[in-house]
Image (cartoon, rainbow, N blue to C red; front, side, top):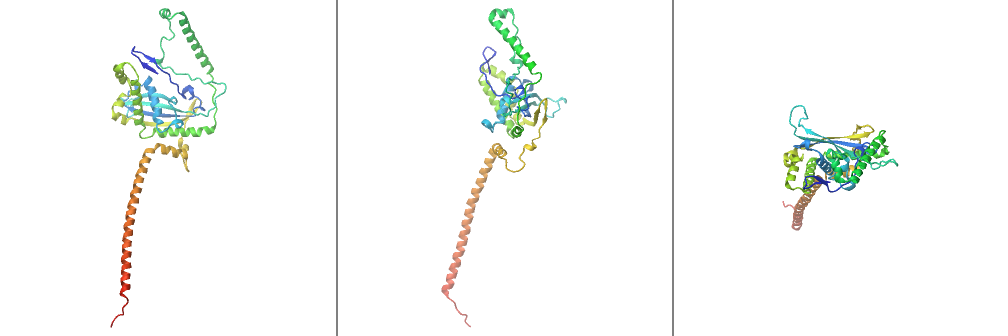
Length: 358
């Protein structure tokens, strides 16, 4: 994590580690990542050319949080290290990029790796993921030492730097040579795939929530505010940061946030050298009781179900009260009629029986 300092440069302030299952970290091994979910999100008003660096990282963090909003702990579907942004382009409302129309926002395509924790790794292989280096993370003069720099650093320091650079180059060549035939693959069981396929299905269900995009934008805005609050440099830097934020128009204009949309998603079953489209129809509960699906349905629809339950209780209470009142009135009416009938019978008995005269 870097922070903008008063000298005008960003300096590393802390480091964070997280599990990663994209690219060489697992995506290229079908047993470690048997499924990937692709999703397309559209943000109205967002500026695609500005979507780089920390804004991409903020989006990944917020995206994982929004999808797992109704889940906690081990119940989470995936983490930020399982999300990769494949593409970020201009979003055209009519999907016609050649029509000369101005873009209305930004369209982001993400890939979510569904990791298999039960995959068995080769015993003699240690997976060492290779981190991608973005242009802003690499100094153009990292290995270029001139005489002026050498005078300031000293011979020992310069020699150490050169040796480190040489070792890094040798390691890169060695890794490339060893991976020509592909790294050893993990092994897994066929029984691992079904629950992971259903995990991918649950990702689709979360993305299709009617409130998903609104929740995602709110989380992204909160993450952005936190990041700006933790940086130094004064208000001038915060103002410049707001202008460079690709999502600033979306954050500031409510109609843009309301018109942002989740467009589509699909699942790919990974294979060595490619993958195939996966149909989730077999993952849906067809008949009988499905505990996991029932729990997922209750978690995803907790608020409307609680409202429906409260309304049902109110109706039942009203019905019980009305029923008691109606029953009481019927009882009183029947009791009154019975008393009157008994009184009439008693009156007839007292008058006795008389024979007809004449």
